[in-house]
Image (cartoon, rainbow, N blue to C red):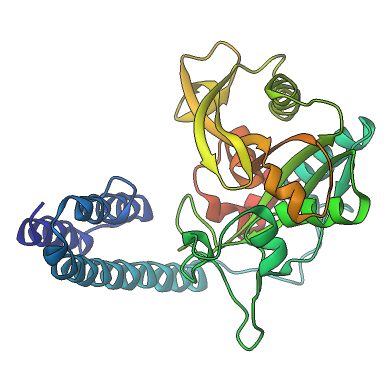
Length: 345
């Protein structure tokens, strides 16, 4: 794609930004420009096919177009948010002198309820359920997990680093809890870590700079294989979605801390726009990342000898959204009492 063609395609979409009336329309335009299959992403991928002398100039032009698109979209998002606040101030009034409807005060948020339910499930099966510091060091968050110094995930566009504190960051994954546990307790270990994680993502319908992650780790001196991993994943997801036996599919992938690494899909069906996980669904959806623990991870934890283990992880917020038919992750962090009352437990 030539720079001129890219600019024209993006310009036509940005013109439409001025007339959109909903976040859904704006998210679609953002995806068409900046998403995984958007114009800018495809243009960046095409750089590898260009001669070295052309890459620098074309790359600079792509970044210029990308930055301009991000500014236009961010301004429109700010306009939506300002309008929403104005409408709420105008239309929503609360009389704090009115009596409460019932003697019951508050309820459990969907995420809190899910965490408690999963914790009780794993504790009953003899697993440790742990969490650790949300402020971590490069060693626990990256080095020990076999993520080398120049891996893209370590750059500031993905990670929140703490200003004034060298090599200190908000954890991007709960895997660092597994590292701390193996270093303190050795093996064997059967554990689940559940907690908040942070990545430098723009807030939209499917992304949040703060989200919850669940990871499972099973390590032993006796052989642990893909069959054990598949069995545990099936048990966990069947329990979470209240399905007798979820159908799983594995696809080869790459994670620095596992080898082999796998992407895990579940069968599902769709009804009234809602995703329903079911063992006989006619479609597949990506649900988790998994794999056999890389030997370098054991070495970095100071564990000697032959060890075997598997690990898997998924975003808890996303699973909660699928189970409850929620389309926008921003709803999980909303403070609208009507939404909380509807979904609260």
